[in-house]
Amino acid sequence: MRNFMPTYMASWILFALFLILLCMRSADSTANGQLAALNPFTCSSNSSNDPQTCRSLLYQSNDLQKEQIAVYYSVNASDILNITNGNKQDYLVPVPCSCKNVNGTIAYFYDTVYTVKEYDTFVNVSADYYSGQVWRVGGEEGSFIPGTKVPIHLLCGCVRYSAMIIVTYTVQQLDTLSEIADKLHSAVDLIQILNINLAHNSTYIEADWVLFVPLLY
Image (tube, rainbow, N blue to C red; front, side, top):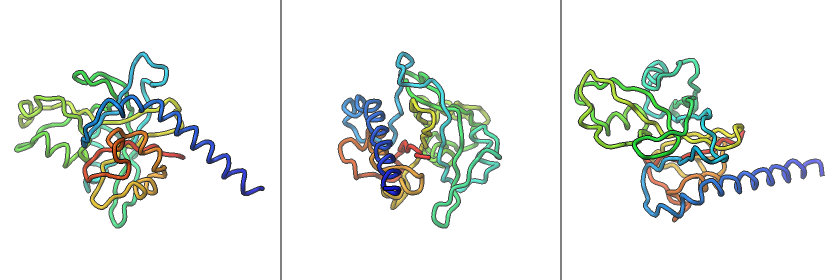
């Protein structure tokens, strides 16, 4: 009995979280039938279920050093967390995530600024420096002039219970949902609920998809 109770309670806690997240994301799942690499974590400033700000984590997998990441993300290098990915060193970047309107899309974002280098394009900047997690709003290519500063809108997520932190994670080659869940101390069921691009085939993922992964500790 001593061993049964913690397992029993943990199962009920997980089930309760499942229902909470299902209510928050079910409307989006039915509204979008398209499979897309990026689906923002939508929010509403009028809903009590949607916090206006929270602490989120962005998964960085570009083989950059902490000092470089700190510049690109406008954070302190000392706040960036190490995470081991096989033989590779990746990072979790803590950021303040906010519900805001970005060119008509109301969702959770973290904003930073990037200084354009020669030959930069939106696609290469998002992929090479931000793990493909930048939301495209249109017209970026025309503003990518060397030496200019351009806004970068990074996807993030919040849930009502602040104890749960959402990681923005870019699927890597050979990833499976169970491996992602194990790596980030999450659960496959919860990942499936939070991501509308898993609504039609909850076991199928592609490299470069951006997923929201809830941490369970």
